[in-house]
Image (cartoon, rainbow, N blue to C red):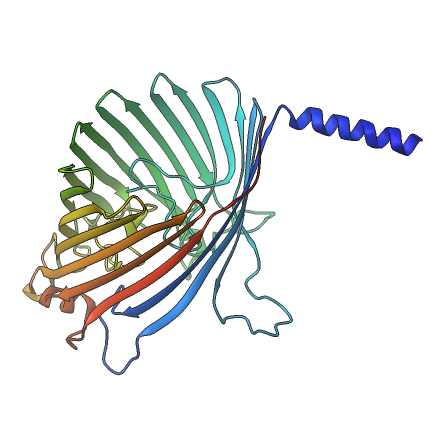
Length: 420
């Protein structure tokens, strides 16, 4: 009898608690086949093209009450075949992509703390990098104020690779030691604008003298804006970087971008744009000055062509980039869309040995089809027509074809939802 009463009480408390909360559980399965024959760099002689299937699997839980949002995203990233069929231990394992709590102090003011994606504006400086199967997330704390179409975010992060008794260097690669940023955003009827200030600290490690180890800071300041009225849309970026780079060079670099679109018909929207990122003459710093822009934590795959020849694990501190492009978004049916893009790439600074500043042209095709509510398929093909400047930049004069194809299945069902 006591056990029955205890169970009834526990059930009543559970039901009462969750009747005032929202719980949602989502899943994602995303296998992607790729054929790489000159992806990210020019294809060389005496090698074979790469072909593989990568897969992302995620389980996401979102819990929400009046004063608290809690989110957990667990993922598994693998290549088909990297674990044997009769495996005794899975070398991949699960990882936490996001795990954060958002505390609502007032309806306007909140704090979001934990591992989280930081995605701002068009993701040029901060982005989720969703194309990459692992994506990007930060261990950070973000204060948020939002009222009357105005938003202010103040974020900070501090990284260590282990618990310590004394201060030591950060040995985890491709990350920062310390980061702080402020982001202001305002929406009007047809116009929106943002201001971003980023203080980014990278740790310098001197293998010969640990007393010289220090965190060196650079600053990025700039704006993103957008205008949309009727069929016309305009977006732009302007950022300037200063401070010091990792090698302690004085940093003075910029990014300028402008894009215009016009919806000619409900199914056809052409786009024209240009982006300029400053670079170093001859691809090297001189007189302790670095004039090459670094987009840091942006979704760089989204920009400058889909074949990732620039700023996706390469081209940092190089000759910069001028990207002239034309795109077209075409709605083929209510479920199918086609994106066509043509890029012309050239150097923003002088090339080594007075080489050709023209890098070449890239054509990108992306087809998207929504099969049903929770299932979609995407496929793409890209082709790079390299010029002499690209051969000099990539140190490859083999003259091979450079192309890349892929197809991806996206399954994103909602497993459970409780919207009380």
